[in-house]
Length: 228
Image 1: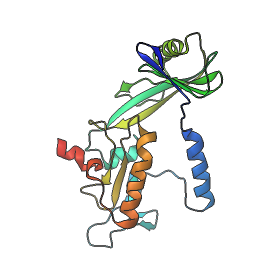
Image 2 (image 1 turned 120 degrees about the vertical axis):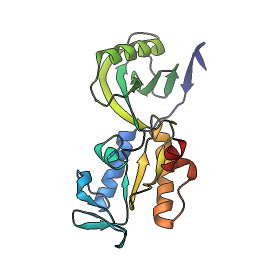
Image 3 (image 1 turned 30 degrees about the vertical axis):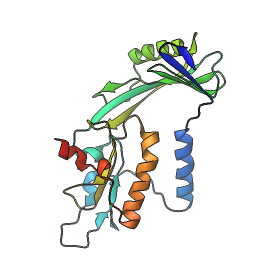
């Protein structure tokens, strides 16, 4: 239903609580011995030289493949530095507002999502070529104005947070093997649609790694190389 001529209200909307989902998944994988958490540097990896068994070596262990899914982190820049990645910073607010329902989304280019009665999140800013995680007064002002407009009244700011999206020039995600380095793959450039893209792309990677399926041609990393 229309909120104004330029805004919509989605009643009965749902969202994925990504921190809760990822935390629960990590705990399950950790308990079953399938997850290890540590920091890694690019220089720790030893790549196949074309004469061995093709294994990637890291800290004395051998792996059939290493998939880089670190967002805008250092590994992506070290291994895939030739691709035109764009870092796009975004900021959001957690706000309290009278009458904000838990199952409602309001959208007019910016959005206001009800998380529970009287509280929700407003976002998001779009700042090109910015990779810091600082919450800024300018973004706060922009987000408060949007939250007031969508809530139809005053809002109280509970928290301000910032993150960085990694994207490619065509705004499509990318998975696939590095064209010149054996054993290293990429999963990323999800931009602002990671919650939508990630499950489907993860399933494609599973099919590639477990069953030898081909990487979908529209999602391969070489797409960017071909377009240049």
